[in-house]
Length: 503
Image (cartoon, rainbow, N blue to C red; front, side, top):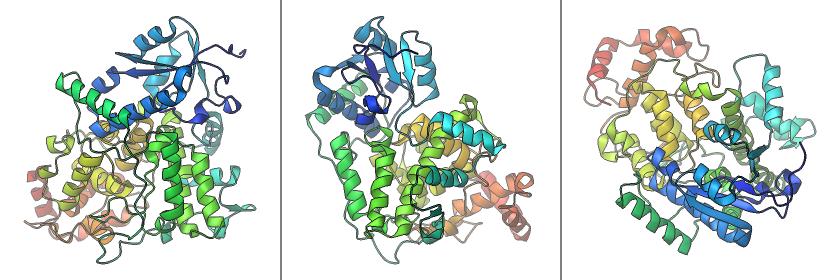
């Protein structure tokens, strides 16, 4: 196809805010091409988003428009279609590949829009498709993909071997939190300063909610995540220079008084397009090669970016739109009101109550509370996976369709029957007790499965295994656990108890 004219406008979606989305040397529009940004109110009407997420997205978009100045036409409209018509009329526009199936179908149906390749990822769609098709199987594994990315992009490599001689240093990255510690004692993460734009956004959101036009959930405290490229780079620098060194060992640990621990908090900046994954990976590798951080921390962070995040993005597109409706376990229960309201008062389980409170107040918690508390609880209770996916999408500041569909459908809820992971990620209370300080003050006991002190996670774990015994009896990673059912002297009492327990 012939190149676009220099005056062909380029449309930037609200998660395409970094310089790599307007760089002609990297497949972007011409350097002097005018830009269009559209703030669509209908996006916030379709879902009941976390208020902090709505604030962050609008703040980031408006900050980017202010940076671009006269080059951008920023339109506030009811819908994207209306906004595009107001911005360019019937003129042709270009846009980088959007990040959701719905948005991709929408722009693809507009004859005036030319879709450019996706940006913001290390691997192209075509490269992943070739890799996946060569696997010759319906089951794709992140570990295989991660090794391939490390090799093809020369990340943490020493010649043709992985740095340190091992691809996976997970065994070094599973330490429980320091006994008796309230926090890890590391410098705090970068916290941005709000601007007049944030005050304007907050005023608009207040008005929309007051008028009954849009409904939110959760609190909108001081903005906790970067809304500009400059702030995102500062957050990356602070993480790699002051926090990365202790990230690896404790990345799976949870402390009630230290929500961020050594985590990067860079997911929002990556998912808004303020950071490019390549620069994050390169910065971590530089810190390791300089001797400033241990290999297990650098590798653990690189795995999150070049491994899991990259894999999830491509699985979302490779498995196509129907993947989101997967429900291999036949789970159909609705989510309870306290969960959808992010109410910590709806449960007496301290770990669950604490995590819901954290999500309600910030729109964020790290990957272990997401997977092994929130996701595990939903899986054990048999909640409908599509509803769980939507809940994660709405409730987290870094939640997008492409992020949550594979993470929840494939990993958290095992709703795809194992196309992404080899086993369900769920456990009894013993795991939470080992990896956190949340169980000691709880009224339930992680070692008890029947009775007034029975931990909902311990009882729920065995109930889940019983419910799906036939499916998992021949799963190599689940066989031993399933056989454990036959050694429970109180299984009948446990099942009766769980039938009467509310969610």
